[in-house]
Image 1 (tube, one colour):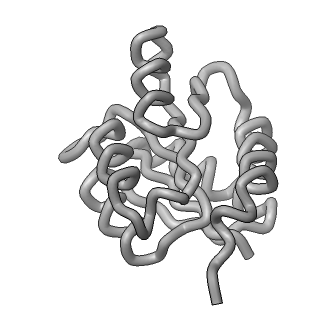
Image 2 (spheres, rainbow, N blue to C red; image 1 turned 180 degrees about the vertical axis):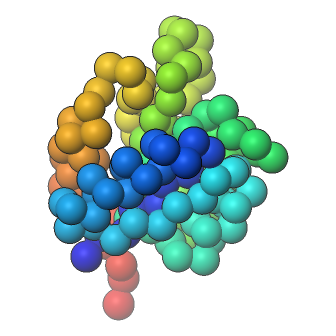
Image 3 (cartoon, rainbow, N blue to C red; image 1 turned 180 degrees about the horizontal axis):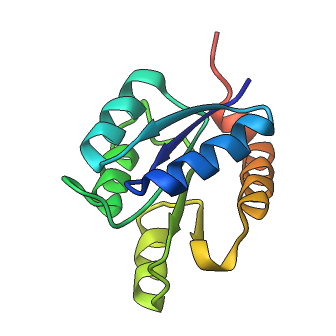
Amino acid sequence: MKKILIIEDDPFLNEMYATKFSQSGFQVELAVDGQEGLKKIRTIKPNLILLDIVLPKMDGFEVLKEVKKDAQLNKIPIVLLTNLGQKKEVEKGLSLGADEYIIKAHFTPTAVVAKVKEILEESWPRTRPRN
């Protein structure tokens, strides 16, 4: 079972995405701020991270930078899931190493799950645990 970590400070969105991913066969972990998210990334080493940008304590860009500079974590695919849709934010997120940039208002939860499945299939060899 693939583990997804959702780092999102909105309780309604957390619940909605957690339900949708659970129904699709994923194990879901939640974090409500950037610091908690980073701690959980290091602890559970999820197969994929859904990361909001506007977060308390540490924003999503900072979390993304921290993950990408850690050799043990930098292969984990990260999907920025946010309402910040300005071109400069999209470019910044992708240049920092995000695998995908999804604007919440443009995607249904079902479409987000489909996109995550697609990314996990594409990235499987690099995220596969080593024996």
